[in-house]
Length: 154
Image 1: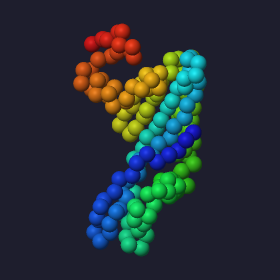
Image 2: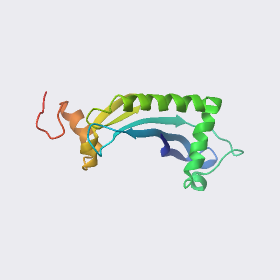
Image 3: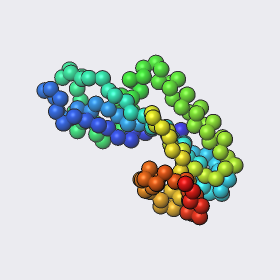
């Protein structure tokens, strides 16, 4: 399972401080076999973590840590404290269960976040389909379709 920082959010100025990171977006992802040779199923869990307020005593400017993913990873882990191991073990189990359930199915990308999820064809994604285009299509037309567009339904 891969743990990585996806993005950070910051205030340009907050009280007397400048360049203040207030939130970190992070994700866990992994892949496993599918029914299609050479194409993997992928599962990702994405989270946003609101950081604690800082004072001038414990402040690090974004520009001083922006090239160090390890710094942001340590902020996320430290926020969970002793619960970090249980948090990551729980996510790893969910991902493993999801991947194990899909070994004989068509390959998909399954993404989860705080308020929802989506499932997309991994073959289509590997062939250059942009997730943004899929989201716009589904939201605009509320249709269900196959990835070769041979079966579009209301």
